[in-house]
Length: 174
Image (tube, rainbow, N blue to C red):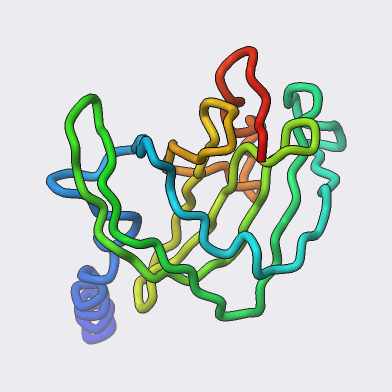
């Protein structure tokens, strides 16, 4: 009985650590945020690029469009990224993301024919018992990364899809 009470007490005390995962928006968090001037891309220039990675699913190449590859941008253990506050659009209504400093587990760069078109961030909030991922995507193929989507495309799961390609008929320019 005493052990059960100890477990219940520990569970109850850890509950405040769970609801703070992910980005926060006012008044409600959503899965796809558009920012016409583009999102900041922390950590993409100060790490070591490994890749392109050889990704397989059950020994076979994933069913990605021709020309899509993924590389990892590696940072030192304990590296943190800072996402500044930003105003974004959700179905025609403007909202504001709060600034966050988050631990970086992994950063992936997705390319189409050698040009970056998306970045996947695998993140954890300091002191929280969770992690999450987001994709920041050049959705129009013009080198501006306007779309932030959650959850992101994590290669450690059985995710077989690459992030959505830029608008039809355009190729990334950056």
